[in-house]
Every structure is written in structure tokens, then in C-alpha cells.
View 1: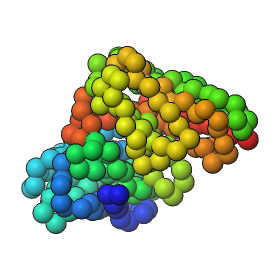
View 2: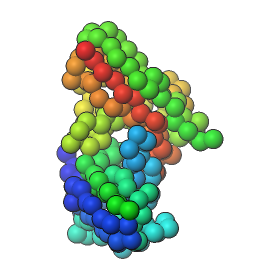
View 3: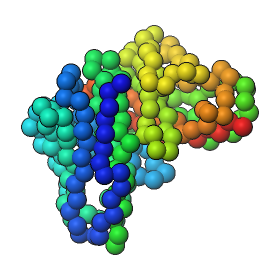
Length: 112
Length: 113
């Protein structure tokens, strides 16, 4: 089974801090890397889907980078706000099987 | 409005009583999938479907069945629910399974007594 791992498990930051977390995945047979944002009592929502080595994507204060050769992706949040508090999930397909494997997530809490 | 709709949202049932959780999407997506969420384990894939009449097992398919008779619907069937199937279930769809972003339903919280 493909292992997708995320670190840290949880993170507490102050409003205005910038933060980042990591998703690691096997670099062989890479197809894509997904990032989702999951707020409590809601459903996960897609942030980015990245496919190319060296890809960088940005949505507002959130950005992500991808290194497929070494098997990691970083998610950055610039100037964290309380509304950024959520669990951030990454996922990668298990090769050609279309089984999308999720990491256990990074829980971000932003204190006002 | 583009959406994935699951029903029921909440259900308490008893061991052995067959139940179906429905899932419907209005985005004409080819790919649909079911996940369960358990504390500390992340989202685990139960079954997925690449298209009508094409379904395949995910990582935790035991105790579940699915069908894909129409493109928009992908029901999850628990023939004989057991307490270890108590979980939060999500249905999701995308235009393709590997590189398409997933659109999730609102979740169905199931308790099996």
C-alpha cells in the first residue's frame, strides 16, 4: 500500500505567523499530489492538484510546492488567520489504480 | 450549483440490519469514490468507480458493496452492518481519479449498535 505521510500532526500558531507543513510520498510511479483543506463539521475542499516536478501553486495566502524526485510537497500559509484553522490533507493516487491514498493530515490551530 | 449529495447524514442502526447510503453528483463526473474517516486513521478508500458499471475495491472494502448503474449515483450498501463499521463516511467525485480534484459530499455519520 502506498504510504502518504504528513508532518507535523498538529500545529499551533499565532495570528500573523507564517507556517508550513510537509507531505511525503513514494517518488516511484508518481501521478499527482492533492492538497485538501478540511474544516471541522464540513467536508474536505480541494486546494491544489499538482502533477509536475517543481510545480508551485498559489491560492491567496496559501501556496504549495512539489518535488517528485525526492517525494515531498510543502504547503505554506503566509500570515495565518484564525479562519485558516483546519486540518490540511494531502493525497496521492496509488499508481495507475486510481486509489487515492490520503495522509492523516496536519491539524492547524491559529490563535487570535 | 455543483454538488455531491449524501443521504442520510446521520443514522443509528443495529447490527445486521441492511442499510444503503446514497450518493448523487450533478457534475457529470466519471469518477466516484467512498471513504471512511476514523480517528487517527485519515480518510480510507472503500470502493471507487471509474465509470458506469466499473467499480473496484479500495483499501478497506470488507463488509461493503457498491453499484454504479447510472453516472450520477454511487450508493454504498452495508448488507449486514457491524459495530466496527461505525464511522463517518464521505462520498466524492471528480472528472478523473488521479489528477482531478475531488468534490466531497457532506458526510454521513453512521452508528451501528
